[in-house]
Length: 306
Image (cartoon, rainbow, N blue to C red; front, side, top):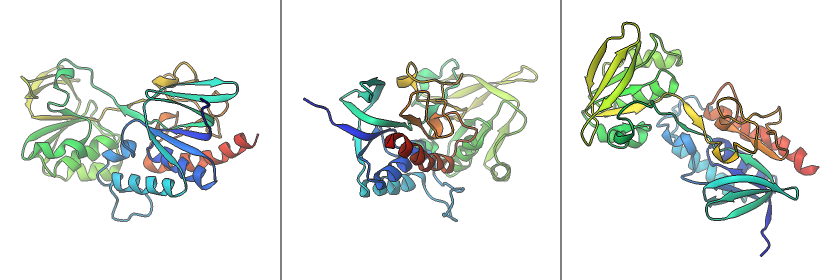
């Protein structure tokens, strides 16, 4: 049986992939969007997106993603639920191999994003889902009137902490440095919230609990002193790892595993482009991901016209 060759295959349906799909489908290209989980990517973890243009009161990440999906479908993009395992090139055509099927395309846009990093500490693995989480909007409601902790010092960590005050009685923010790298606006909101308590110059050494998280063992990085903190929840916001395992042996990546692209967002392999959080870039925001999705359309047009 002959497999149909599509014009474009997009891998990942976060803001970058959805925007690329909107632009490509609107340009009358035959386009498929392959997503292994739920449309929206990491945007689904944002309760209130306050810095996205056009929404003075903010917007929920999932609501924005759903509108983007509907817009792409209105222009003709076809969505496929499958897990990409690899990419190859056969007779000048790109082949995307998935768990359930394989798809052929003249060009591929990788928008597979990244996944949250782990602390890698004793006790962590056995308590995942039993008090340890990476998504405040997903799990915050489980910790009503309880004491919880957030680890991290960037925008994501502070967003999580502020959101979690809706449910928790106390939120402890643990950061290995004595100052945050998050935006001043978020820092001001953090420091003026009476439910939030800061534990700086500190790291979590290990987590303990029988069947559920019960306490953290915390180490002060300056003095080396150990202390214990009784909490029932721990939200980790300590960076991300790119979802590039399926193309690691096919494309040029940087030392952290992100896809290296040129000025047109094309990767080391002609016809394969990368957008959003999965590529090497200095800023990873919903707005920049959307910008990538729009910008890549020009490079695709040039490539496909050749």
